Image (cartoon, rainbow, N blue to C red; front, side, top):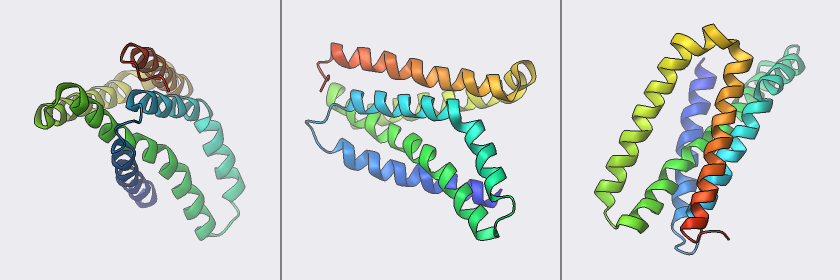
Length: 161
């Protein structure tokens, strides 16, 4: 559990730093970047369980260091992508409404509320009703849906390249 939590927190932090760096370029189409990240997360979601099982089998007889590094890398990559999303959305929102406090406050509120509701719904209902495989597929599908929707919205804002 320590490895997973450490990789998760490090991934979010590194992703946030990367997202902040990406968002500094005023010419960068931030909605397209966000849509790309959401799409990548959705695609990762569809292969994640099989990938975790494969790595688990491949490292079962390996050293503790091999297991640590493999687990760490598997968690670090998607969580870094997740961590990049909020700074990118904040920068986009600030560009649009020109109010940092309102942008940050609104996005943190929506992000926190969405995470809490999704976590509760998944633990309390979805896993019991759908099982692990289908619950992960639903989550991955939602990432792809968000990615597609934001990409379409980016065209409305003229952020297509």
